[in-house]
Length: 326
Image 1 (tube, rainbow, N blue to C red):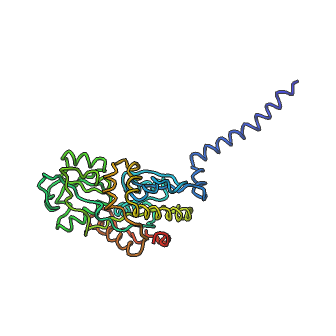
Image 2 (image 1 turned 90 degrees about the vertical axis):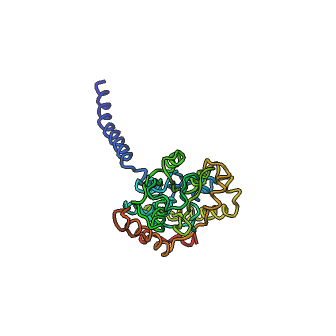
Image 3 (image 1 turned 180 degrees about the horizontal axis):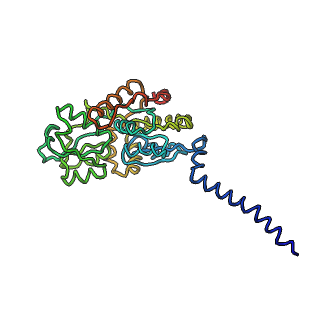
């Protein structure tokens, strides 16, 4: 009878440390992100895709053409590149300026694909009754745009083309969701914006002062994290094949494309149709010439001290998927 408590005591002395050890290991795994480490090193881990509304990736998502990937929506390119810094996405699509600002911020990524030029897809908007007929008329006036996005480079090119500097205008950095109400309310004199926000703003009383034709290519760029490039190359390759097939299908079937995309974009079908007619372009591989193009943009931002130091954009270009996109 007196032996009954003793086995219980021995059991508790032996088992309790084991239970505590397992619990501590589980807690440590949660803190250290053991699941993330396992995910990053396995082919079964989903490809994490960052996209913006209206970009070519939106059509892939709307058609559910890439099962097994996870999607994250971003309002603008600069917000998307921050997700690379946080290791929240593997691949994403942005305009031509966000990679420059991201590289200047030492965010890790490679550029693996691009698109044909889309100069008609971004523009400077003004009010019909404003008396503004040329970009030079904006001297001393307030111009709104999203900092670090594709339209930032368009502003730089417009200033140079009109023998103006940043000191000649008042720049107000506003995200698209902030820029539209500020423009509508007359709080800014001009708004530099891209599709589909551009198409949505084309209302009676609004005119296009100038678009990027002859000034900026306004290409789309596909960025990928170095870890994904190392651990998920075949998933990336497969996704790029799907992306190209869906993009080519959309260009060949514009009416179906608009019908499918309008609900995804949450904008009217007629607006979607108008925006896509000028802004949907085929994909293209990255080449040394694309690296030169990006380097020229980066050097322009450096000269204006919009980024703090010179950066090597050519080194960010990786052409290993050229045969998929070519």
